[in-house]
Image (cartoon, rainbow, N blue to C red; front, side):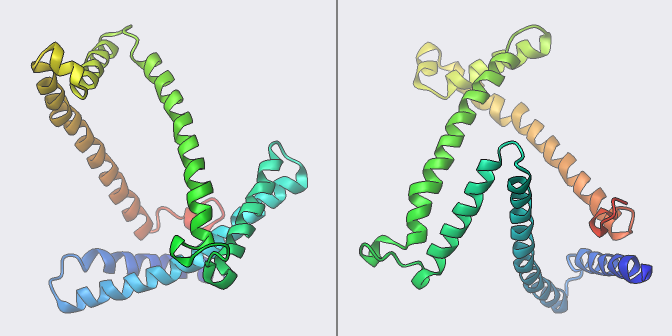
Length: 217
């Protein structure tokens, strides 16, 4: 029983991980066919994962409502929004019955009149948090924060017409900051993330990382 619960998933992860890694380095038509086959299987598995994710979401919010946890009222709106959206999506293919079909479906109406405004509201709130964080970060208490403050001022002035009116070198300096030190930092972060992903993949392939099996080990 332990072999079925542990050994078989580890064997599948090792076999598929090695095959998927090697198919990128084998210039053969079978490698391309294998990648296309695995891509189709990935879509199928992702489809089932959607149902698992939906069950997990509903179970979490149902538990919060049942226990009257803090903020359980918001969990109630999760169910209302989910069921209304599903009902609108299933009804007659989602076609809006109160206006011309050329204007879109009921699902489109929900997205454009609820989802989009709600997303814009959230992002507008995030703008104030970003401004507050920038104020705390840009206070020149150390050499590093002073350099960050000066660079931020140059970049902000270089992106607006006022900067060019002050000096023609400000936009040039802003472009240099964005194209040299900023790009170098971004590449360093991407390299670190890539190496971390490779290390995690190797650990999963060779069975060192087993959290996906459950049980916390």
